[in-house]
Image (cartoon, rainbow, N blue to C red; front, top):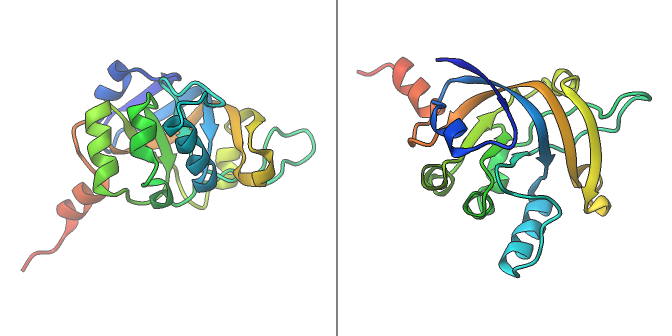
Length: 185
């Protein structure tokens, strides 16, 4: 397992070198969106309308941050359970997104889309939202403010720590880990 430092937007060259289990320190701009925002974004794509941000090379963080303390750009920003975005993620990858950040397993359609479109699913550490929030340097709501914490935000991260869960080769760290330690009769 290797450690990489990458800056967004990501390219296929960036994502193809990553292997499930690698650690990545992300820098640059990423976007936040949960299921309600994903539903709206996919509806815009299907209607052929413009999105509130450029999907090409984008990384989307599944998070609903808490309000910031005075002087901070954001509050606690821990990952949301990712399977709620499984319906929408293949469409987002097909239209240029290269990365997703969340927690938990993804379905086979998402894993297949990662292979087909050079996408990566990153895991962030659940329960460490306060620490993850400290790696966010700026945050701005850019769409759907009526969704509150689930609004789409443009955030700037510095050395934001994530682990590759699903890579472009079809590997899944959850399956790999289980196979490594599973006791067989």
